[in-house]
Length: 177
Image (cartoon, rainbow, N blue to C red):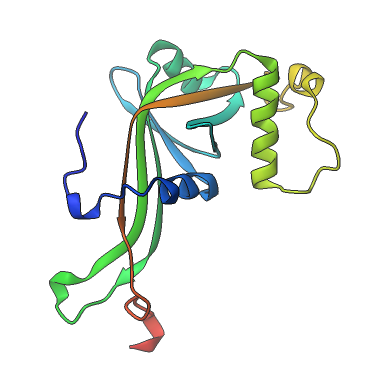
């Protein structure tokens, strides 16, 4: 695997990377069916050094992962445009994490239920008065597709992070020119 080319932008602060992955809301799952790339934006949780996500059984994403479990998962945030008196030094403030690994279905009902509860706690904290039950996860069928929910996990073989931090007062604000 390749390392970060622009070494000055590489982020090695594990706490910062962990916090970024725990709090970011959308990641992009990159897949390949051998002929074409396929990238899907999705909700996820980062827990125990793994990415977890879910979706209905079946469909193109799940078929590709069944045939080729090698994936790339990317999370990024853009914080604004960094201004500088020298036009060539105008830049973007951002943080991004890329990880490579294999997507595996979570078979254990307890682990799947726990991960779906983590997702609910992340995306709708405090909304439900009771925790998710194993029975609900086991019996749930999508009203749209009629299929069961499937949880997947990616344990990264490689993880890289890059950032371009910004200084207060250097982010471009259109109406303040």
